[in-house]
Image 1 (cartoon, rainbow, N blue to C red):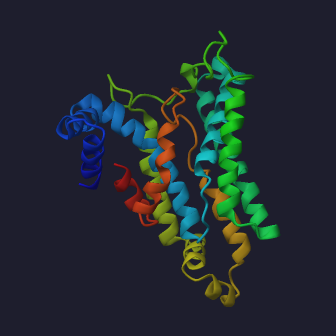
Image 2: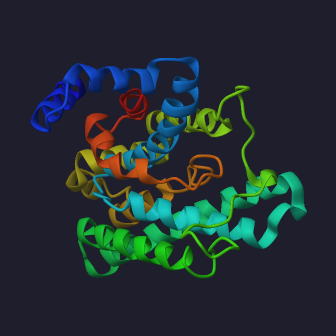
Length: 270
């Protein structure tokens, strides 16, 4: 209802008919099988994954605002892996690209985590700054080493077929990444609720002073691990080879709506 009201208000302010705008919004997202599977669920996949990633940091009380930069770093690394390996390794290209993206995303988060632990630099500031660094780095790459062969458009070459996740619904763009996102949500929920590491993360976020007084939790180390660890969930095939990351700009709203709970994160995105 809030989204509908916002769309209607913006339509009125710009001199457009709100009902036509709402109808277009509905038809484009839920109006047909193709709209649901090829548009809504495909674009929801990176939002789910990044929302889940931020959930881990926020649950630990770490205000990581750098998920967009970490996604860009992971996507650039995965594209680089594909550019180097190409179709030569066949299906092995998929796990290699996934691993490369996860490592790059985690590495991008490691620097703010280290700065927080070593020098007390607030992660809110450092992670935001790293977003811009990642943005300009990707801009350089798609105009330089990773630019498509014709050197016309600022984008990387299309991801090779062997490095793309398989389509799970014929006639649509919905790929295995959506199921992986749901699986990551279930795994994160279980880990936070049923493991010793998850308990430490929740205790740290709920009351760091109590966690420190208990003497059984290294507060600094747990917080530091919560930031890079989030990017290991999944960081490639955002839109299965299309190199689209615009949807990721809306991850903060998803994080605030989901109240730091994995299941709520998935529901909020959808």
